[in-house]
Every structure is written in C-alpha cells, then in structure tokens.
Length: 260
Image 1 (cartoon, rainbow, N blue to C red):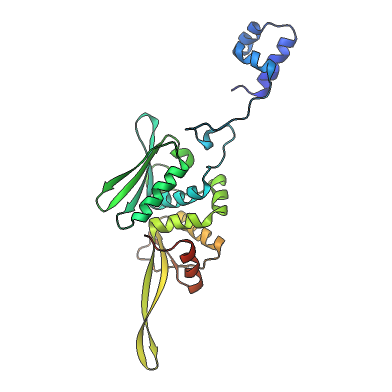
Image 2 (image 1 turned 180 degrees about the vertical axis):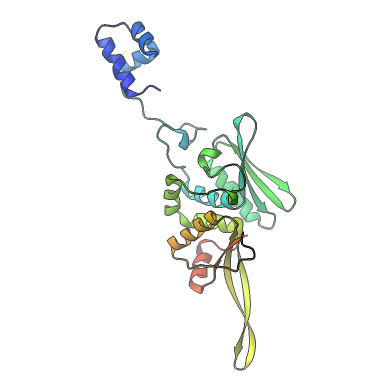
C-alpha cells in the first residue's frame, strides 16, 4: 500500500504531462496503481475479511466478541499457553480439569467466539482436557505470549485489552477463577452459650505465582467493588488472594459461582 504523499506526487507528475510509464519507473509504483489513483486518490477503508485478524489491520481494532475475549484472556493467563507450530501457525492450549465439564464447554465456546474461522478441539490428557485452537494470529490477540513461564516474565495489558477489561471485568474475573481459582467452604469453631460449635462459611481463592497476574485480578476486583485480602502464603513464590467477606462472596456468587 502506497502512502498518500506518493500518490499525490504521482498525480502531480502526470498533471505535468509525464506519461504513466515514466512516472511508474521514477517512483517505482505500478501503472495500474497510478490509473486507480486518477479515479480515487484516497485508499478505500479497510474491511476485515473472513479469516483475517482485527489486530493486523492498518487501523487495528478490538475482537468482535469482547466479553468472550475477556473470559478467554483470564483462562489463558491462568492455565493457558501459546506455542509456535509448523508453517508459522500457533496453538492456544487451555488446560481444563476433567472434574469441570462445564468449564471445558465454556472454554471451547470462548475460543470459537474469538476466532470463529479456526478449528478447536479437545485433547484428552491424564486428568485434564487440553482445549486447543490453532491460528497464526494468537500472538496478535494474546500479546502476553513470550518465551519462558508467565510468572518469570513481565505481564502487562495493552491499551486495547485494558479497555475491554474495563468494560467487561466480570468475564475476566470468571476466567481467572475458572483457571487458577476456586470457591470453597471454610470452617471454624465458635463458643456459643458455653459450647463450642462448628461454623462454616464460603470463600473464593485465587492462586498464581505471577505478581503481575495477581495484580490484574485484584485490580478487576477493585473495579467491581469486591473486597479482598492476601491469603496465607504457603511459599514466597505463590500469591494467594482471598475473598471472604459475606457481601463480596455474594457478589462473586452472582457473577462467577463455583466451577461446574
């Protein structure tokens, strides 16, 4: 694609009486292009065709299914990886435990919504299903992709991603919980009327080795008004985030819920 300066220069030379052949040789552009510029100087607006990527356009845009993308990004940051295959293709793999068939279906649906032109399959592994989708555009859509483990490198969101997360924080939170989180029932004992009784209460946990990913999670919780605390750290390398206050758990139950 030629820039507007080249187009105007070519038309100016033609207006001076130069032949299209001479202008073509001088500027290194095709005669067909010069003929088309005589009809229309400005380039036609780009249209995303089937199979193309919105991030690879002259004016990059956001995925057409932003809510599904926010959920998929959460799954990827938790239990996903992008790997280069042959002929420049890439595979996105999300590890989903066999215990949660609903989560597996939701993961397949999210990949299909974000890349409807590409194939998705379920690869049975020991104890989990690797939901896998192929596309040459996964690095464009998931720029957090890189060499090495995610917790050993810097993880940040690009501006267009953050705009999606600001609009759809709950799908992102749900994806992170579905990958590296859980809803459990804790218990403790209380002294009531002189007798010790067992007391149970639900809470959400999110566990990840990456401080950057944990912060993306807590920033999203702050955005929707969920109170959280740092849970007990088993090791220095693992970050535990706990949601235990009754109102916040109730809010999480409405928008996230337990895995299924």
